[in-house]
Image (cartoon, rainbow, N blue to C red):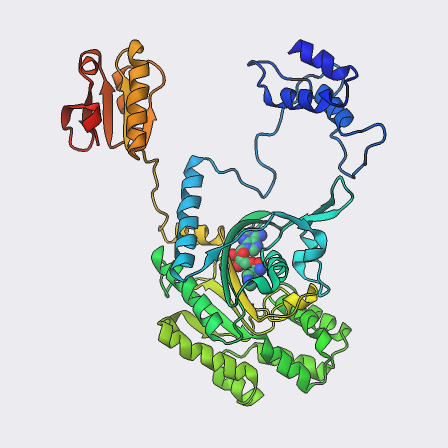
Length: 493
Ligand code: HAM
């Protein structure tokens, strides 16, 4: 390795540099040996054309260590607000994601995915949303403004526009992906989270929203959550739109007004009134808006708006469909649900825990005009996002977290050092038959093997002993019953 350091720091031909750098980065140094960082940084700078001719992005090379500081002690925790997923957490994550995916498939959806890194422009909207201020964004080495996605909907809209007429509507797409928001950390809110999204593109009727809510209810039921644990608050942005129209407020202010109203529970009401006043809305209209937001029954809303408007018609149809889908007891009308994203245009909904201890469990709605904000033709669309953090908090509260241990069917172990090769043959034969095998790779006492079998929840032990193996056989011990038998390898199922 010393030799490599010397070569890296001397001048290299341009064709050799990348090869050697790859080699430096992939070859693992012996224990207790670390490549001095200043050498790698210096080499990386050279390889990237630093110091001459190459394009200089704004990603600055990390600071160099002092000449005599060859080691840097790192913080072993992940960055604030992010998580590692050691096996026990990964098991839970897979369990949750499998339910997300299974429910999506039950409803006939196809899975899609997008890059975690997108152009920043995709997430910049005019309405002053919180999500804009929470963006992880930077300039890449090619001087492009990019951002880690804070949500999946803009990427989905981008892909729908890109596909254009090549796809036949309606589309029913789902995705499970990581999102990044520089959030103030609270219970269930992190700087990185995974979101399950289901979206329907191309259906203007409320049947779409009704079925989306049905899929979330199906998910809740699968994991043991009932209508007495959670509910959905439902409203329509058309309620506000109809009021604003009545008061002559221009349509282009709609998104901005919704964003201000969404902050009602976060900032004092006087601030809300002040912010609404800044948009130019009359005091009268502000008072009426705030009054409507406190309405909790559709009949009262009908008294205020009259029955003929789209808001009432949509909401009534949703409640009627909820009955047919069989989830009436899960949903309630609540005019205060507006949601914090500017693009919603119709029905909006949020999943909440009935004890009121947690932030929103999920949320979604109709966004019929998002595509045109990106220059595409508008297509009616609606969907929801469901995070992986709040639901785990709720499952913990309800003592519903599943106990998930490692699961391996067989432990295969050679009883003699010389039989390590035979054990490998046995493991391969079992794996070829689709059985999971944890092969003991070192010479270990049987006591150790039994302990390991218990830890990984193995179903049986397959022991390779000299005498049996001469006959092509192995010893099998079924761990649940204690049953033990000898069997030819070819007959082992
Ligand atoms: P959202 O309400 O911003 O909507 O997020 C949806 C869900 O993602 C939330 O209800 C919550 O479960 C989870 N979530 C959001 N931020 C965080 C965070 N910082 N930490 C943990 N979980 C979080 C949207 O993102 C829309 N794009 C959803 C949508 C899809 N609408 C239509 N299609």
